[in-house]
Image 1 (cartoon, rainbow, N blue to C red):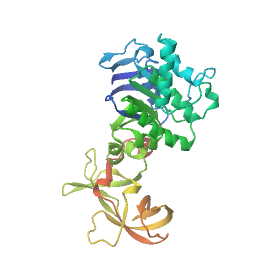
Image 2 (tube, rainbow, N blue to C red):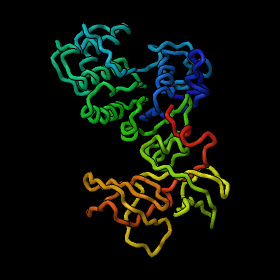
Image 3 (tube, one colour):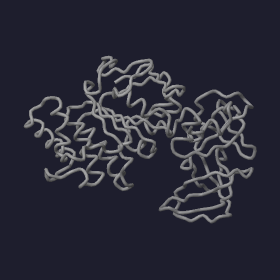
Image 4 (cartoon, rainbow, N blue to C red):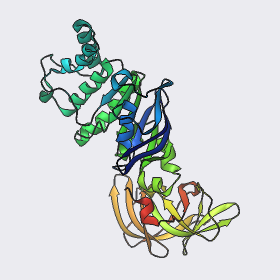
Length: 362
């Protein structure tokens, strides 16, 4: 499936601007971004519910211009679990095949088969209001599959579920998609959801795609300061960029860190921004090798399992957060050494519009 130069305006609001995307067959893709970034608009254009102002969508190499949703081979699963309340669960699933003029016998057979395949084994007389949200969402997935969909579009499919059911269902969704050999596009604003189940994550902001890649690529090689800040957690520190011995160095005044991930060139001596994820810090003994090791003061410490969640002060009283593995407690007020591997230090040019504008989700 390909999206080519797709743009969409709603009056004076530009929802999408020249979006290009290729979704590989059999992949599980998540659209991730803040509210209002264009995720659902793009999904609805792929589905055929909205026509783009410019550009086109291609499914199996065929233009979808003017092709209605029911002719696209797409199944759609909504956040609000839109089952027909007056129909039994099995009738909800058989409805699609019947509309496509299958015989009632064949439609019922398909409905029962797909309900079984997604793990719903209930009496035929049960109605949507009589089952949990998780079961109802599985039924809506069976309904989408029963019409032989090859591409499954999921718009915040877990948003109406309680936290524990969300955790179960996100993995169940991926399992179902993979077992049927389907292609799935899943819209979410939940980072944990996207990073834990997607083959590829598409990060969107203000109607544009700002980065695509595997969850690991987005987390450890963010191409922009916005992605570093929006995807997961990141400490953001203003520094000066230095260049020495073929490496970029973040000069914070009282500390210097060699940075192994610098996606865009930065002039020597210019303002820059260092981004470091809390998980990148490692507590070490007083080092023989000082490179990327800093002496810090612990201002607060909280243990969660084997992880210590620390608030630490870098030289210059710069406060950052760290999550370190330690079997020994670290007391507030103590001085410790922390090391940050070079490839876990990200360096970006200082944004022209300022830090607040660069990391703002709106």
